[in-house]
Each structure stands twice: as structure tokens, then as C-alpha cells.
Length: 205
Length: 205
Image (cartoon, rainbow over all chains, first blue to last red; front, side, top):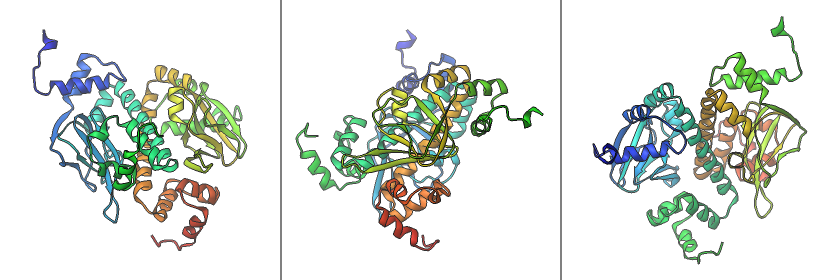
């Protein structure tokens, strides 16, 4: 039966992103086909850069497999990680993407990664042709807003051990996939301090 | 002529919120009337609390006049200000509002403040009856997401003097309306340090 046949190597990724869309809106087969026709597939090797600070940010990216990180580098050369984007996350430098200005973040791959990309022009077309996607991205940005609201509260008010616990809840299992250096750069602490936190027995907090 | 008559004391506020809506979507007179019928008006005195941490957050609030602040208090009793909401800003504990769970922030008024409130139930009704509001709130949350993305980058990567400059750009003129104590609690620095920053001549950064 057709639904059990794989007509192309990208079909599994198509199914992943459609399942992601189905979390928030219901779309018909023709709408799904139109949405899929707007996507571009990009494969990144580990450490490959998807977007560099200063470049124009043309795409919003859905991670089908692997993990992206988005970060800034301060004047002293220190990297500060804004977010990780493992499977099923969306990631972009949103200000650059929506205002067609130079990106203020760099995005690269922490593992070999497959992304499905939606360009700004295609996203605008999608909103016009299938307005239900306004709802999808309303919920997506709403959830992102909530995530950042919590991140700021965490950043401002919590000590490092509780920041690490919050990180583990937001990104289940990710601490086994990425380096201590990257987790430390996300938490704003040194790798040595993170190592001390990780050695504490579970359940101490 | 009717358009020059004020039929109620709330009409100016209605016009303010409709102008805010018109920034992102076009709505007709009947849609505008329906939207206005869903709003509740609340007046707050300076220092009055609109939402306390731990309470259920029933409303998203549009500030027609005055200024709100949203903050958390850490275990040592120190206040951390997440955001200010002067005129034309929207403010809520978004996680609590959308999940009907206890608010993790307190919202109070820094000046005598007029807000127009939209309850969760009324917002859901609005999305169903006038789907264009999906677009309005998509853009609102998108802008909020961008604001927080920048706030996190600022928080992680910039020194205090640049954080203060960023605050002044985000909230033009607000530094003349609110106390140094509150600005310091937003920046995560002491009022004494903020005072030093404010005494530096303009243009030094």
C-alpha cells in the first residue's frame, strides 16, 4: 500500500516535519504537499557552519536529525550559547530572518545534521496560501517566548546548579551527546565548575 | 459627528488598542466591536499587584497607560525584573496563562496604570471567530521572542554598561520614569554600580 512505500530518501524527513506540524494544526493532503514543496533539504557535517554572524539569515530551520547550536562571540572571543536545537526543534536568528538584517548569531552543527529549511519568501507565501500556518507559528513562537521567559528567569535568579537542572529538563538526554565545554558555554560557567556540578550525586537538588 | 463624540470614558483606550492591533492586521468594524466586547478594563494604583507568583494567571494584559513590571524573587529575597511594560506593551506570565498553572512571576504597577485584559477563554474564542488574530499574536510573540533572544545575548555576553545602553534603546525614556533600583534589578547589577554608569558622559560607549 502506498502509505507503506518509501518513494524517496527524503520521505522519512517529510513525515517527521508533518508530525511536528500536526502537534498544533490539522492540514489536508494538498496543504501538506504544498508545504513540503516549499522546503529545502540541507545536510551538515559535524562542526559545519549553517549561518555566520554578520551574514543575511534567509532560512528558518527544522532539525530532522542531529543537533544545531546558536551562539554569539563576545569581544574577548568567548562563545555564549543561546540555544541548542536537537531533533524536532526549529532554529533561526529570528531578528535577522524577519528584518533581512545581518545575523547577530552563528549557527553550526554539533553532530552530522539534517535540516529542512523554509525561506522567508516561502514562509510568507505559506501564510497567504494556508493561513492555518499562522496558528502553527503563533504556537511555535509562543512556546519559544515561554522558553526564553524561563531562561531569563533562570539566568537572572538561579544559582549554577539549578541552571544545570533546568538545562537537563529542557533538553532531555542532550548532556550525553554534547561536550561539557558547550554545556558550560550555555550555562555561562566554566567547564571545571560544570564538572564539579556533574559529580554531585543525583537527587541532591 | 459621531466620530468626534466620545460615547464612553473608555473610548480613548479602545482606540489605542485598535491602533495597536492595526500595526499587524486589518480588521473590519464588526470584528473590532467583537474584539472590544471581549476585553475587561482594570485600573491599578501605583504599587498595586496585578498578579502574584503562585496565583493562576487568567489574563494577557495590554497597557493603555502607565507601566507594569514583571519579576521573580529568589530564595534570598532579591527581586529580578524580567520585563517592563509601558504604554502599548502586552504583558503576561505566558507559561501560567497558557497552561493554567501557577504563575512563576509577579506583575505590579510602577505608576497608576490602565490595562485592557483578555482572558484565556476569550482569546480562544477570538482565534476561532476572527482567525486573523492568529496572525496578530503570531507577530506579537515573534517580536517577544526576538526581544528575549536579544535579552539573553545581552545578559550572557555584554558588560553592564552595554546592557544599560540596550535597556535604554528598548525602553526609550523609561529611565526618567522609574527608579534606579528597578533598572538595576532589570540589569542584574547594584543601584550603586548603575549610578556610576549613569554619571558617565553620553557617547562614551
